[in-house]
Amino acid sequence: MSGYIGFNLLPVLPERLLDRVIPMLWRRWGPPPAGEDIANALAAVPTPAHRAAALGYYRAPVRGRVSARYADDATAWLRPPVSPILYLHGDADGCMRPEFANRLVDFLPAGSEVAQVPSAGHFLHLDQPDPVHRRILDHFADDDSPA
Image (cartoon, rainbow, N blue to C red; front, side, top):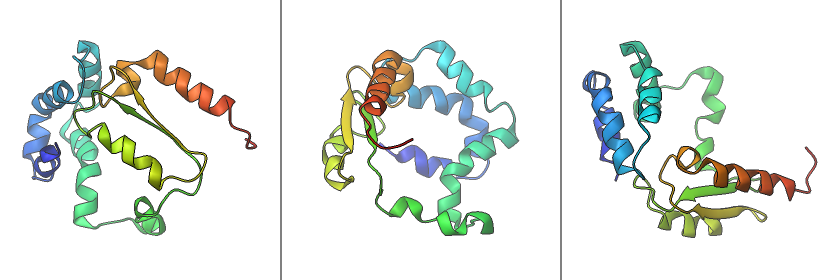
């Protein structure tokens, strides 16, 4: 499910083929995409520089280059969360298996919630915006901690 990550590490080619890769991944990762969602994603990366910046998300960890400004946070993703979180996962996610969410709850701090969103893929906020927004609002409405 993650072969695209290796492809994105290649030089130049991913930038040139992003207009093909984005629609392909979107089809694999969930319910049929809305044409406007793909168009918006492609419009956000109109130039090779924009595309290289977007692909930098995949390339930076492998290259090991971290700005001094972010050096202390470079490994934050390896540490477990310390505050309760709401984790939502589309039950039709073709990028990360929905079963991942079932095991995640054991690793989260007390008070965390894990839920699958029916009929949603990897871009669950676009696939099912109303249920996702409702779930987020309900989570914070039930939060007793100070803002």
